Image 1 (cartoon, rainbow, N blue to C red):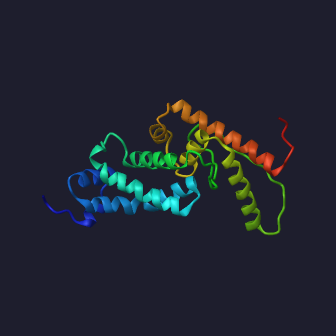
Image 2: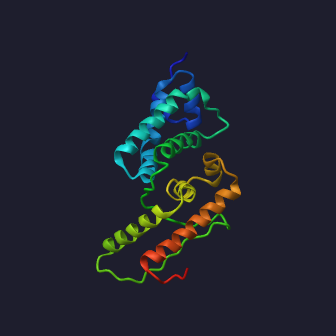
Image 3: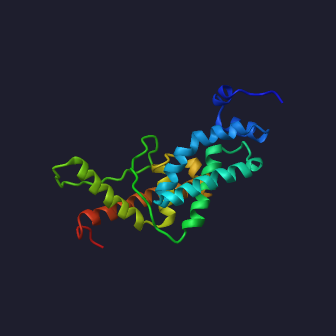
Length: 204
């Protein structure tokens, strides 16, 4: 088997690296870990809101990737396959817990069906950073009240910025359901935030 330099491996796509890893090049796996370790940590921390659990899940995810490398088929993007493993592990560990950290909700300008979430806040604070922290605290509280179905797709879309197609694959849902849950989740977040910021201003 002809040796492949690390420099050459670094130029390959994720999917090419997986093929080399399946052929016996463990350095290809190490590069995948380097590429995704921070992103995976970022995602799982926002799902668990616990540093130790996050670290454990990151390690377990890469262990599953290593152990199950021969089950990967190139018909799927590597990132989609990996996130599916990660989110299933997180769900299994935290199915009874409702912890989530903050996200930034945005509108996709390329999708006419994607609705933005708008929250007007006229409160004036002397310190902009304090104002932002208070807003993020309110958002975190609201996220904790969302159902797991809505939280999952909103996190995948608005934190990881995955495509609708990737989310559909990861969540094993039809495209229409994914878009509906994202929009409904954002709408519910807006209502919750308005109730948190302006208690009693929204009628039941």
